[in-house]
Image (cartoon, rainbow, N blue to C red; front, side, top):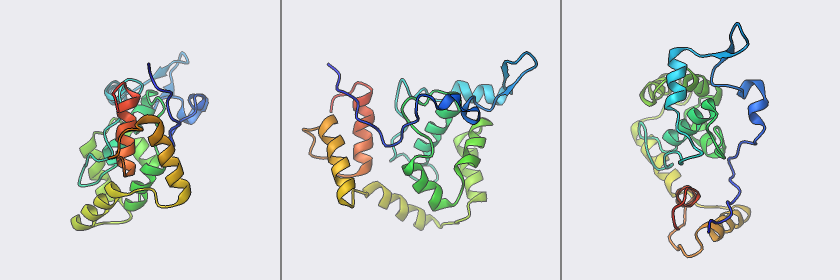
Length: 192
């Protein structure tokens, strides 16, 4: 028997695809009114993870030393392709990374829609970030993010509510990353 899904904090509403700016993965109406994509955009859509079938990468996975970034890119690619499921690109977790480096979510989304790979996007971020950080600063920021736990009463209540629903017997769930990892695992059929 499957458990009822907890409400995610980063959800796209079912109707969002009806808004033109979110309508398609970088598509423009063709001469007959259908959407046409460039070969790079077609490849990007085909290579986008289907987040209705599997979760994005763990927030712990690093790219260029940054946690969160690979997960954000998975969610962004899936959003561009219309395969984001209940995940939301540019959610508060993604915004932690975007604010740290000083880039806009829309700029990253455009790169994803153009079919750019992880390495190309990382290079673009390193070149265009408003906030340039040293390697030790990136390591420290990533370590802090990985150990972040609920800090205020409301956050703790939310955290424990989700934890209690998806993995009530797990005593090792202490950080936001722990909670995201177990939520992803349980959501796609794993046992807590």
